[in-house]
Amino acid sequence: MTCVLPAVDVQEQIGLIEQVVAEAKERGLAGPSVDSREAARSIVAQIEGRVLLAKLLNDPTQLETLWRNCLDLLQVPAQARTTTG
Image 1: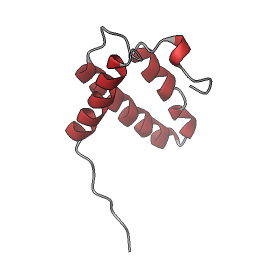
Image 2: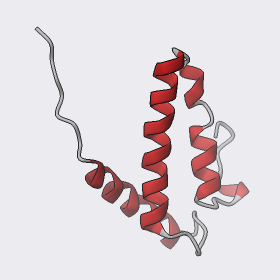
Image 3: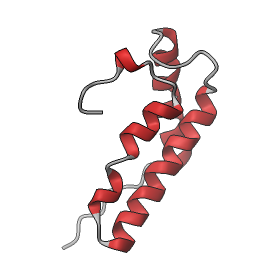
Image 4: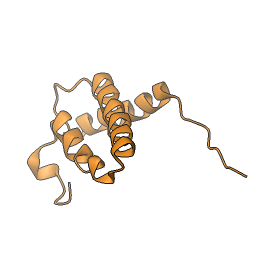
């Protein structure tokens, strides 16, 4: 028996990430010029694309740059980044 989890709607994913980006902006952890909605769309696209690439190449290391790319996209200040990011 296979367990199939319900897929989360892409628009719902974008909405959830948009809320987090907006909160980060309010806290000064994302650049003030970042468009929360467009950033969220880009992050979802990066996640989906990187996962697809990792599967196609059978190479999970394709996911390693995802976090750093998201931090760059959001213009997160260097002092707010973790040493693992």
